[in-house]
Image (spheres, rainbow, N blue to C red):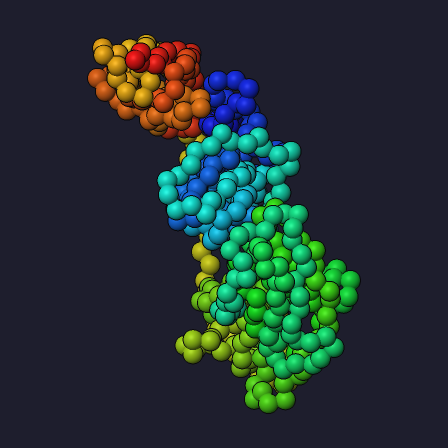
Length: 477
């Protein structure tokens, strides 16, 4: 029986110690436990506050019997990266992310197993402050009832020219207004590729980014031709669209987790090019370009959605096109199904396909899977010395710091041991003389503190020791 051990951190709003380990997946968002790996975010913590000048390390784990193949990292509406995980039962990945602007962000991590199944999204909310000083560690806010799934931003084709922001502060969710469309003007016909431009009329605050919806009819039932901007500075983009057709477009402003009202919808048409010397192929999605007309051939190049390729030839049934690689280094084959060809492409010559590669099938017996370690570490010999310390600084014979000690053992190896002091933070414990120790303090205020020692092994199993008590007294006089 497989157990998925999750080790997470959070502060209880009404008690003085930490919630420690959730072995049954209770730290996952309320999206269900369908097929796919169970992922969790080790850091940052829910409610963390960081300055804009500091990058954020997103550390995540996932567990799956089929092996964890990769992690997907998200920040609000944008996919940040896809990180391979090596197909192990317990996967680990991290990503350095630089916040683009102050505001609240929803960070998400989703894992995919070796069979192609994607698990539920794990999320935490953090705040990026405008300060450039030290990191603030607040009391985390309770998680909301629902965790929205971030949508990866479409690939962009060219580098837009950013426009200076109108305001320096991020808009609140309830204060977003509709952007104003600038060009193409409503009802006009423009040359390909059209250049879309808009503005945000609020001079008090700015959104996090914009979503540009482009559809073939006014219902906007299919907006797959549109795109999203990386941030609020981009208010124009040259965007390739199939020629000889008309489109409707609108723009909405967004902050993390909230999309504002859309602008009015305008219509424009893209005129058919009459000067093109060769037929072109407009990609409707990201596509591979292969050595021959078929998926049995190796991929030698890849092109982004919205790209335009010159068609040089076709195969016998016109299901594959022989196109010029944009770098000028020869030709390769793309499937007609991934885009829209334009011009007299069906009159182009039939190009003889190269011989298909010889496929050798090798059957390898899978080794017996290694047993899964589900045993948590053992914690013993807990102590704090001295049990009474002075607030802020030492007072006579009373020191201002104390040493927390614990014996921690695990057959698979110990990954991490920490001493957590609710309301004060956590202290890494390091091996010393057969035990793990950490020096804690000084603390600024007198009172009784609870100390909780938690340990995690290399398989992700966690354990928590019995609470220790430390008395902090004021220095008389």
